[in-house]
Length: 158
Image 1 (cartoon, rainbow, N blue to C red):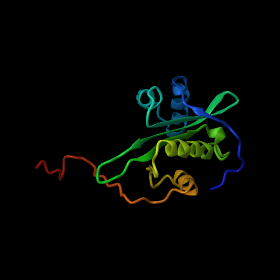
Image 2: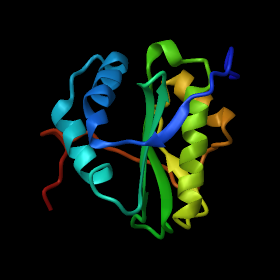
Image 3: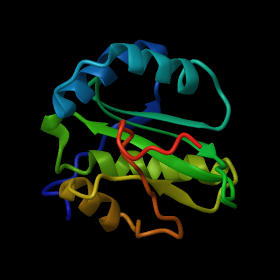
């Protein structure tokens, strides 16, 4: 899925003052105000420094997008790798290459952090996001995510 037009944006680090705009952009896409969640994310990824990726896209002095991620190593033999867990773009910036520029900047940051692989998770019904990541070179990985709903029926307490 190629952008209709590419708009060059200023790429910079996210700063604590970007919190309200990130939460606002997220709410435009999800329909939910999650200020407490974003405050916690900012505590971990923006206010601290380390193996984090916290990048902003700015146009005319206004935040128009962000990407967040970190280096993680999980159980089951997974080597340390980059994880992208949030990409958000102002609706008016969509299909203009903003998310691609953010993801490119994140890939560069992950390379500097010394990882050779970057992962993300996408809801399988979210076709536009899936198409975006696939167009950027992402494909099915070597791990399969499994889940189970917890309820009162059929749970074996051991």
